[in-house]
Image 1 (cartoon, one colour):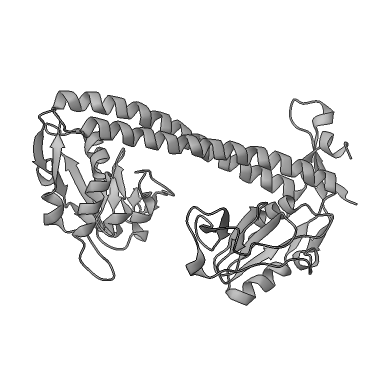
Image 2 (cartoon, rainbow, N blue to C red):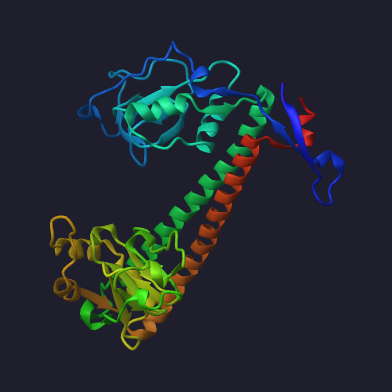
Length: 391
């Protein structure tokens, strides 16, 4: 049973769309797990085989560590299940045959009365802080999770799944847009038969070294860019929050709109951003100011992300713990440079693709916010009255 604890009418809608706040019954996670019938199969890391039939679940960003074939053992037990990792928090809903190849992975299957997919979403809603191997799972088992009626669980899962599907489609479009951008760029920069001029990178920009100590302006708000704010391979900014000068302790480099910020620390990470506002950045970032009579900023930004440039820059790294690109080697890298008239046409074509990607990235943010909101409301008992009355 569940109890209505709060009622709020949605503005401008009939009473049957009134939002209801209910208290779902709760249970400890450890009490809802099956104790028998789960036989996880672990395989050795060396037994992973590429292009096999069944995936191997591992602890990592992409979860899939390799593939195995029919002759090797697979997971034995009822599907679907939820994969949980102790070392780094990993949650994955799995409804296909698999094996696993990492210590710390646990396979969780709830008892009857709790849908595995709903169970998965409850773990996303209330993640447990990682406090170590056994301690982490102990805390997880004692965490209370909501257990609404089965029909409500189905409807919550259906709503969240629709948003997740939209997120997947949006991500696929972003990936295809990136592939189109790279294809166009390769086509435009292919020098075959075009009689272009070879230029050293160091001749098409000025390296800015204007230093600033933000603590001398403690009340001023700075747009501070660190390496962590530049996404690898995409040239996009992430998690940027303006900050007061008092909190930026060391000397930074000043940059302007139109400058290119190039991550010289671990250049293989391919962190390159074309600034569209002014600010300060970490000294692990080069500020490159394009010579506008030689190269268009958008074109230089695109060129610097090309695999050949990343490879050559990375080959020049020095330093064991904090490897940095070598300035002289970087500046001597040669590129095929189109005329300024051709550059404008190239930039126009590339900009059209980037503008479309920008819309997709904005949509990605909105979908993430929508999912987070729907997840919170569902697990907190904020449901529409017309859904509750179906049960």
